[in-house]
Image (cartoon, helix red, strand yellow):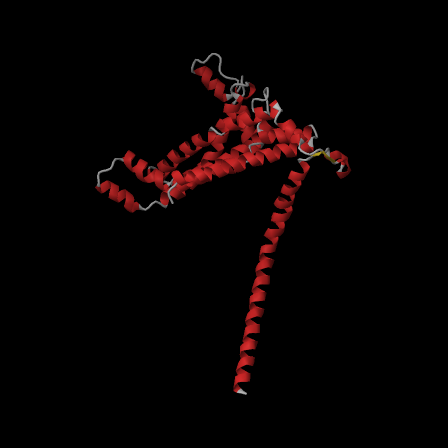
Length: 310
């Protein structure tokens, strides 16, 4: 009898445990459900649809009845499209803004961390461009870079420059102008991340270097740079992805011109999809862009083993 009662108690306890575990599992799924639904609806389904649409010839104005399967024709046409490769070349040039942004952000972060008071004030000042509306920033720089009445050219002419650049209106200077604006708007975010990285470096390392008589440059090269390498790696990846996603500045300032000198890949995709109404071809360009970013990210993760210290 005692043995039977003991088995009954153990069985009842096991059922309660299973019931509690099941309730916790259900609760966990319920808490994760909004994120899973959002991920499925806004990311997974559009991605699958993108690959499908890239194999079609489709004008979305005709509705789904106008979908025509053409296989890989969009990709064949893509590799013969000079306009698309011009936009890809412009994107590669735009990548030059990333190392300049990292360099300026690191220098400013070191100065703010060690040389100035009211650090929070300077953090806000430098972070303001990053959180400002891109349209507002673009309009401000449109005024600053105005060829004849802009303050930038006014300052250059006051210094004796008789024929200053026309900036956004000149095919030679339009893309460098976009790069300067990109650097200016990105410095705040990178600086704040670098500040967090600087403050996480153990002070013992610098004290030991001081005892050994190391110079400031040697401490920067042998302690600061290696200890910040994970931060630099993170900012490098996000910076490269951000440069490939550049669209809003181009749309407001130049619309890809003059003479396609600022036509980047995302703007080219927008142009094909919503101006030329070639949704299938634009989807093929998007798939190609996805492959390029994926390849660059894989190469970066492979290369980071040689220079990132964890």
